[in-house]
Image (cartoon, rainbow, N blue to C red; front, top):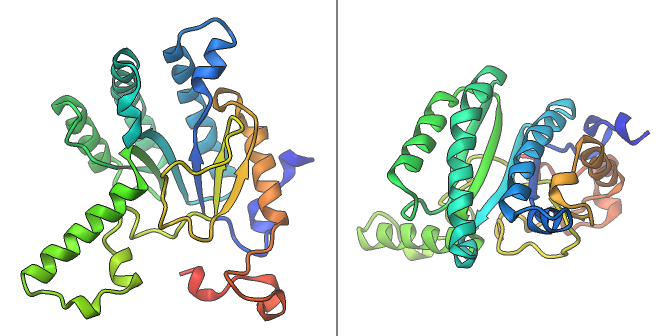
Length: 256
């Protein structure tokens, strides 16, 4: 049964799952509901995803909650999403503390209200000792991530703390939002679209992509198990031939 699949049976451990939560509005329209109702239902699935990660011993879950481009959506929807984010943090932070889940929020915070910024900072501080990490990407874009990393390095060069010839992939990577955790092993996108939409562009260079027609509000634990089962069938070679892999495992450098 799909529900019995466990990530630990894979020859390449599944430690980090990224999710593009798509289809909330379409789910709501199909039921004659407001768009924000779809997003409210989608919040419930965040809890399911955390439960699924716990069952599969997945240490990192990164969710694309609000992209840099989402500011261009209707003003009422944007206000509703910001309000929903505020409500989510107020309600869920105590639960995250209880469950030992560390909260991180990545993205540009300058356009958030002071109240929301304080909630984010409080949540990150209170959950800092969690053993599983939930990262919410809010006002985030992969291009923004690379640009802010380049800006940090430029300032170091300007200050004389770094030579241009010393900038390589490792040095640049250390300036990115998720520099301290492994890159995603698996990225799930719901609602049928087959693109990554400016999400974790650098980090997903070798990530396995899984696309499903299921709308995010319907993506329950069984659907999550199906994505894990598909991941477990794949062979990750990281540019090597199949014969070069020791017992089908990826290079150790990719597991660091």
